[in-house]
Length: 130
Image (cartoon, rainbow, N blue to C red; front, side, top):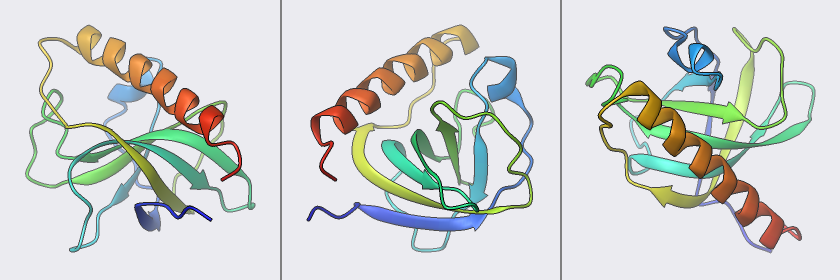
């Protein structure tokens, strides 16, 4: 059986809510010292209640938003609404979609994230037996 590329776990921390203003809210967790390569991944997130949601996860420093040296994992969960702040989640990174990069505008970033969401859905549809 296929295994995820990387597994991250952590407590969801508040961010600056830029994803929410774009209609793409994220669950943010700190990265361990042995973090996976920076980039965007098709992911699955295990919630505290045991449910699993497909997601798009950015591992990195958010160059369009902040270009911060403090890297983190930001997961946009597909077909989920709710509050995860302060709750522990498990993020399984299954497929590398693209490298992290800086976009010319927030709208360009949002368009690319929407493309990444479609790519993640296609990946999981093609690998439904995982």
